[in-house]
Image (cartoon, rainbow, N blue to C red):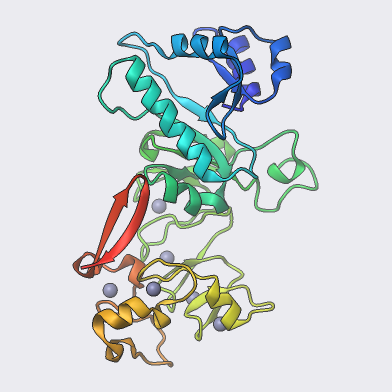
Length: 315
Ligand SMILES: [Zn+2]
Ligand SMILES: [Zn+2]
Ligand SMILES: [Zn+2]
Ligand SMILES: [Zn+2]
Ligand SMILES: [Zn+2]
Ligand SMILES: [Zn+2]
């Protein structure tokens, strides 16, 4: 979906792999035939030509040993909801054509790391892989050339394939992390306190004891906000209005002002020392971790996923 260069590469270099291109650019008519290309809008799963749609359905019909995957590289301005909706519809169509019970199709979705939250909200089974995708035709999305980002491309691969099975090339600055049992970026140092390789943006994070998690290296801790953040132009009120609460995960407040939690357990539980060197979890009152990583969370909160949207409910 929207990945003409990959399609061309597979056709030329790996003719044993069958590929079908769905693309909004109808100039592709000049290069491909109806049996491997359809003019298509991935935002609403729309085929402009019904004959091409029939060809695509033929392509979806698989033999028992065939393996199919969807690879999509949407424009980064696209909203994640319609793309996720399309991926679900294509999976349903595939299952219907092949008379399968609900079977997920492997998905590779190329998108910037900072959209992780939006993708996971729509498709909780997609996880971000550390692999940095370089675009030769976009200066800001590559680590090649002098105008490139210092931290390398911000574009990543999101997939429902277990990250453990993805083998990233060590010669391109990736390493195998024994604790995480997967390949991560070389600069992504494993944190024993967080129990993971925490970096998302291509820098080496450091562990903040007052946040109870790893943070970007240039961030400074604000006690008032209970978060590490950029030091310049920090305004506590404005900042907090854009934060997601670590207890209820709603946007617009931090844990200290969580109405739901306050109603649930009473105001007395929200007190903790301003001079502490280590964070105190507001849920279990133990030190050293924040509410997101609290092992007691499930005692109080229940995550309900319905139609791909996850909601938190107090028990
Ligand atoms: Zn690790
Ligand atoms: Zn950490
Ligand atoms: Zn901090
Ligand atoms: Zn602040
Ligand atoms: Zn809250
Ligand atoms: Zn806790």
